[in-house]
Image 1 (cartoon, rainbow, N blue to C red):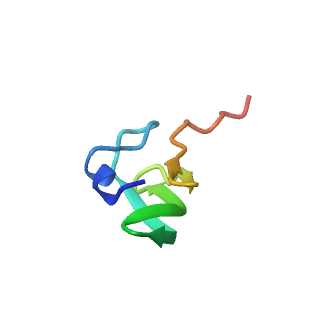
Image 2 (cartoon, rainbow, N blue to C red):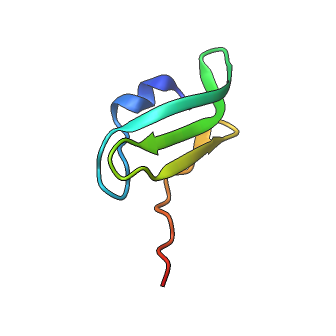
Length: 60
């Protein structure tokens, strides 16, 4: 994932800004880490440069 993507992505649940935590980075590309919503606190993983922004499943 490129850091520039942070300018356009938001939390899919509440549409708030996401906070980036980088675990591994190479040549300006984020290899792994996480994105956490500043409002609802949902966390989305970044694995193999791909952010997984699927909303969490609700408990029924």
